Image 1 (cartoon, helix red, strand yellow):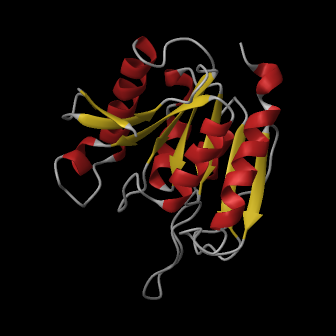
Image 2 (cartoon, one colour):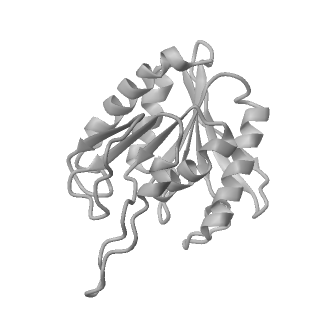
Image 3 (cartoon, one colour):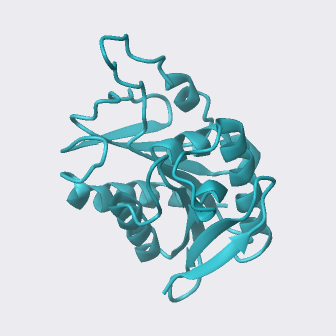
Length: 209
């Protein structure tokens, strides 16, 4: 069973649901949730299970606004600050030593990309990266967030639904994009999420330090 850890941040307590693998920890995967969802999202669970199978500890992190019972997400700067604080606390305690992969789904993926350098991430996992907000009520689509992906200097995996209304990120140097059936929820392609994450994590083994 996961161990729930309350972690102080500049914007109130966050909560990390930590699961340790049997047989010793070879590294860690820390994942954040989407803007309107929680850590129980099926793709986060599938990714976590894949990591546990490779001997990585898994922490699924609830942002302070979720812990406080608010549904609307906090501003990006608050999300990033809270994420940095949580990762730093975990790395100073239960996840000390070994390689670190950060990531999340949708908004959580963006947070992990923006903070990859600050958190010392060895790689970043993006589930359903929200590349470009879809057009609404006749308006043009929102601006692309491709720059957040391009700015990450460590290996990146994006797992994206083929019919995601937020669009499809492009592969790039050090960035793999796996296309699975379905939309932004990844529900239709959930059976493919775990294997994609497992295979990618396995390729990082030579880079572990």
